[in-house]
Length: 367
View: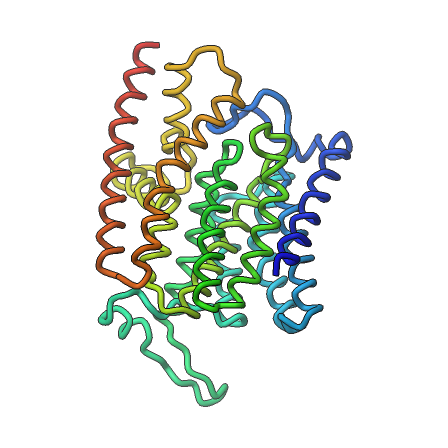
């Protein structure tokens, strides 16, 4: 199975290197400027690294199909499914004219296609009364099929929501890619121990594609993932997490704990913007945890390069959530314990955020 990882890793790395070698031909449209809250790098940098990820995934899926581990039909459906969410982000990376609403709608489309044609659906929440509600089916005679609209809606919202959440935590070298790699490694570990071959094979391919770009992104930041890559990574991560939940007896809250950081960023930022600041939940601002943290580190550690600040922020945030992700493996089927840990980590996140936000405001006032 390791060859699936190697095929996608080598493919992703080669494409990433080609993008760097040829950047003088596309940098005029692919560059990430210094404008914006998250743009703290020092030189114009290509933000189309998502191309290397999608090529790595596609070539990995083809290799899976060649050994009869994936049907040609499912291969084509898989590729068609990931295209809308990726293309919307890639167009934004190149021409900067795709609004967050349009990108979210394309993510919803990809999620709907995955739910219908790949049969990827959330049917378990860990709580029986909720499961009974979302799994109510309506039978349609003229197409001879039954549809659980509750499960369908929940799946589409969860997949598109995670795609947006992963994009939120993107911006610093290695942060989003590193977090996604950790989650993918957790999926690989659990799927291998539970005999879930499908999730295992796709996760190995996904890990290879992520790793191929990671070595070019962290710590030096030669190329950035971009919106296309970030939305694609969030989409694929959600797909694999749901697949793992469908094919094993793990608690869904195990996955919720793995995704606590982007999930908390998405939920709390939506609440903060909508209810407190009275702005659009999709409007970017400088008050996400990683943006606040780098501002504080710049006040504490003087005269470091932006790359060094990136490394410090990335290692801080990955280290903050890694312990609970590893601890969760001890309680893979224990919904109540995992739910309690999830609530605890949500409170920890909120407390840390409030403390750092206050420190951030003190620093800005002092300057």
